[in-house]
Image (tube, rainbow, N blue to C red; front, side):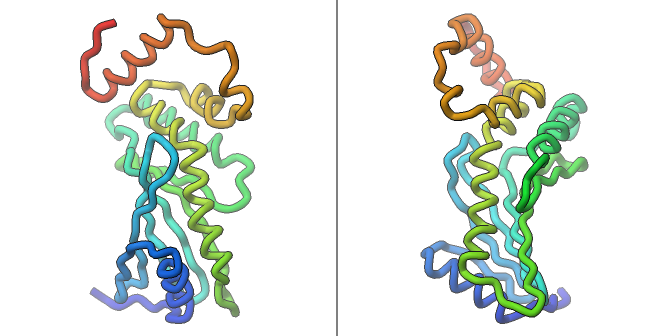
Length: 192
């Protein structure tokens, strides 16, 4: 494997941040890659991180453990639309979608041309990725496991917090139907 060229100083800045947080990580020295997992508050539960150190930049990738089924054209279309809607208006980073295997990720970038990233820069890139999966993760799982449409999933994720706990909750039949779709998507059988 050919050794990648990257800035040792940028790598040390990332390493210092990760060590200060007492996070377990691997550093692939030949490639300039940091790898670790981070638990989040979402149905997704955990994001796999890859931090790619270059000579003049730092790219933070968060990879979702839940993939869309690449053989299901409708699911792929709904996920694509959902992620495009989620990306609209984002200032730092974007969701990415691999049409070959259904992998979903979030990418954040730090320009390090002529300067080192501060601990705050590194923190913001890592936490921004986690925050995006916390906000949109339940929409991802709803499309994959409950056959939600993209517009339904994005509305659920972007609904103001006070509206999430309104009196207009699902009635028992709607709740049973949603639960049956979820269990069916997980390969189970449910009787209601």
